[in-house]
Image (tube, rainbow, N blue to C red; front, side, top):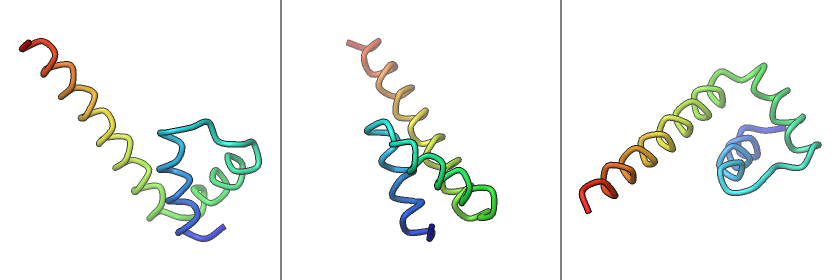
Length: 61
């Protein structure tokens, strides 16, 4: 798997459940690619920040 496909799957995983072959391929790629691991961490942090922002926004209403 190349980084382009891995980053697409990392993004897709926030929208849908990955198929088993996609998930396994991504996990193997993440074991060997520090750049994609960082991308995955960044996506996770951004997702958490967006959820927190939405909760704060709803509390203000």
